[in-house]
Length: 316
View 1 (cartoon, one colour):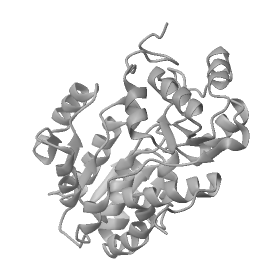
View 2 (cartoon, helix red, strand yellow):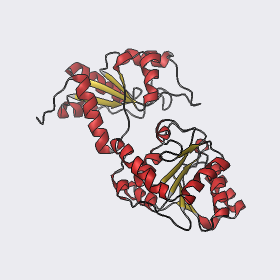
View 3 (cartoon, rainbow, N blue to C red):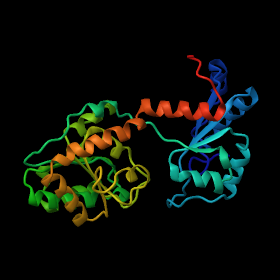
View 4 (cartoon, one colour):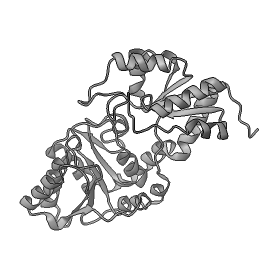
């Protein structure tokens, strides 16, 4: 009944889930996505028990990245979840799809994921150096344009010897990226992240880097941007990055430009020629992203739920 890909995902089916819910007896059940069978079991349990229900969802896209319309699958999902109390979507620009296209109406609110940022706020502010270390933190996949990042770094290195590039080692374009680095003869200046043993070590990578570069051809938004902003790094991102990418305003708290070598090199030179921008941008960015941390997102969820459901803080 449920294939392993597409609108329904059979691999997420836990028959003992309702027993666990009964033991925990929550007041509110929040589910991660509409298409997971176990979530529907939990939803039906919550409805039977008179509990409030929330479904958290990202934009719904097909395999080509196109926003889905209200076809058969979403007509069925809407019918199955027609009595849900709230639909929380992961970004402001996903509200219209669920409110209008899928028909959930005023049950839809904009939410967000929590970002694990606490350790990043402790990083020291970047200062002027003879040469800087650049970070390409996203996977080596087509939409993030890692080959473009390599071209950008090669142009920087030609002007500023001693510069270094740190790159995510994962992704299907890995071989092409390594081949291009060899062709350009810049291998000694490039480091691939292959020795990370746990996520808790990731912030240390940011701490030793100075400028994030993300010349993406397309992206819905990336936590890498939030992590760089919290760390106090310089930030240069493509104007084709949606969501979180729009938090970076060109020449205000970072740089947001076309994903070309020329445009990125121009913005990077601002940091090199005016190193005081690291401090200026960090002082804007750290307060800007703090509400998106785990602590800030918990506050947001609490406030959103209590406003919508009329709950009272049991601590009072």
